Image (cartoon, rainbow, N blue to C red; front, side, top):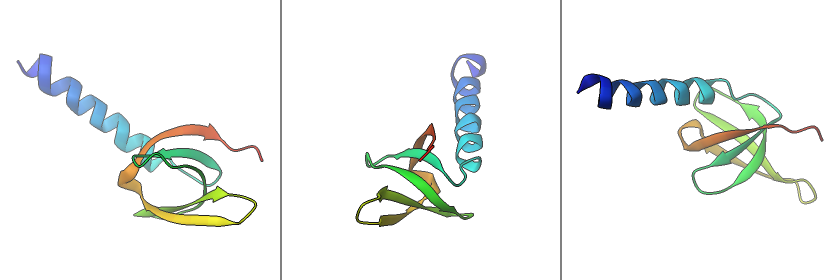
Amino acid sequence: MYLLVFRPQRKREAERKAMIAAVKKNDRILTSGGIIGTVTHARDEDVTIRIDDEKNVRIKVSRQFITSVLGKDEG
């Protein structure tokens, strides 16, 4: 049962933690709330993301709410 249930779950969680820890400036991310933005500042517990360039809108999000990294922002 360990091999079928717990091991894959632990592996997915370890991959997720590594992905969140690797988030850095200029990465495009998706939050669990559906917000897509570009990281402007990354700290230990949270990140600041830019969600609108024209109006300079930035928000601070806890790292635990990052769902995925979409890639680098080239702009």
